[in-house]
Length: 178
Image (cartoon, rainbow, N blue to C red; front, side):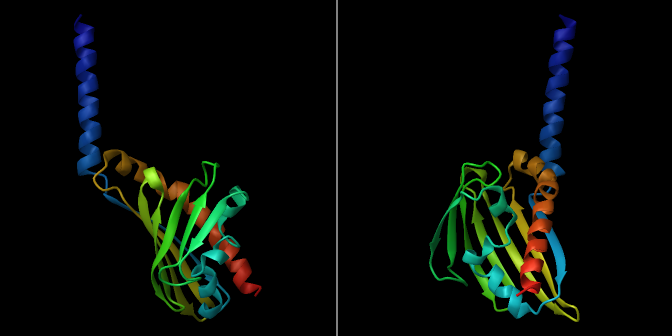
């Protein structure tokens, strides 16, 4: 009977540690970003990131499920442009993305909605350099006080980072060959 009490206490302590670490140590917000230098001017890159109809030409997720269904709303590019996607492939999933800020040849900021999986924001920053352009693709996820979300945040860079690298490389190839 003593081992049962000890086992129960160990489980309670582990749960308490899990909760305390999640609440007090892990961050509420997770940032993932990747940067690439593209030998092309910002004017050649901006239309590729500010128009959702162009996104699948370089998106790493378009390759994962060519059967994904898309619906576009609002203007073709810029603030208010919105895309909805639906895929049965779990690596692609379903959701929507809307451009909420746009500065010509400099910045595109979007709001992402993954339904039950939550929301996030993404950005594309383009800086003119002597080599062409430095493009940074970023993602910010707010765990909104969710302990599970905070632990999940520990994996975000490993999950999203390689996809962003692949997408930026695809973007580089298209922009440099235009």
